[in-house]
Image 1 (cartoon, rainbow, N blue to C red):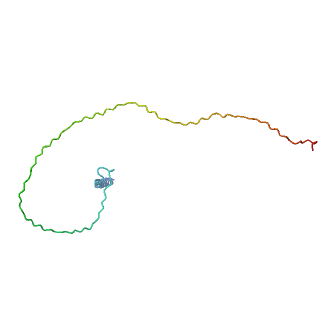
Image 2 (image 1 turned 90 degrees about the vertical axis):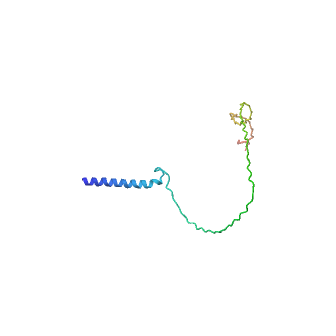
Image 3 (image 1 turned 30 degrees about the horizontal axis):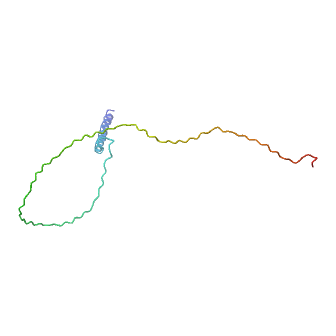
Length: 131
């Protein structure tokens, strides 16, 4: 019994060390946390280059010529003018009348107008004597 517990503890310690080693190996891609950015991916390409050279050989002959160098001393005057701008806002209420047109429809109660007429119709005689 004692040997199985010791073997189990050794396996547990070795497993945690293995997991810890893999976690630290991948930590440099995470930039400070497990929720950091995705590790970078790289792609490589090869470009064929060619170069063309032209070699020049220069020979210098010195001809000494006396020249004057002019030194000009300039004093600059920079005037500074301070201007204080004051914005004065005068609030006034001015009435401006706008025409507003509004349309409405109102329904008035219906008025019923009755008219009557009498029509006299002359019917033919329907008695037996008239036949």
